[in-house]
Image 1 (cartoon, rainbow, N blue to C red):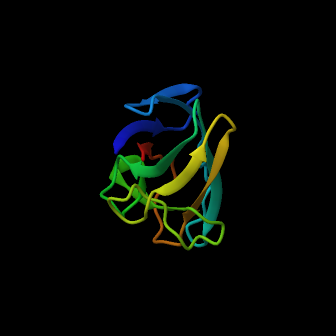
Image 2 (image 1 turned 90 degrees about the vertical axis):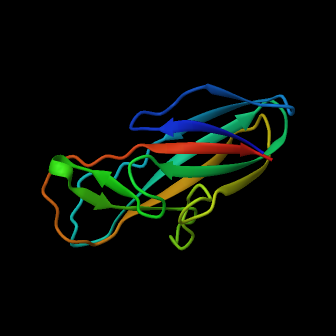
Length: 149
């Protein structure tokens, strides 16, 4: 299995080609980031993002999401003065299945038979109620991990 890592940041990645060793599949990944906007930590805040994936030939992949700034299973956004704001990413609208990279909390999402037609995968984000943090900008960079099967 080959793994290719792409960064899902605050701006979408457009037209980034991926090539899988022997399969010779050239794939393109576009992203729409999960942006929570203004958050009130006394209540749950939800948002959505998206990964759009297409390949030159039909192939099966696993799509993982990893956070660069926190240990596996502990997603958080960094703010001012080292403060952290906890959040989660899910594969489903009911927010019951955590989306990870398979190495921490949550599994990678299978995307079978991805071909020239764009496959869209929705990322469901949630900032749960938590202890207050100082006002400010909180961000995290996600890595999109594509594993060819």
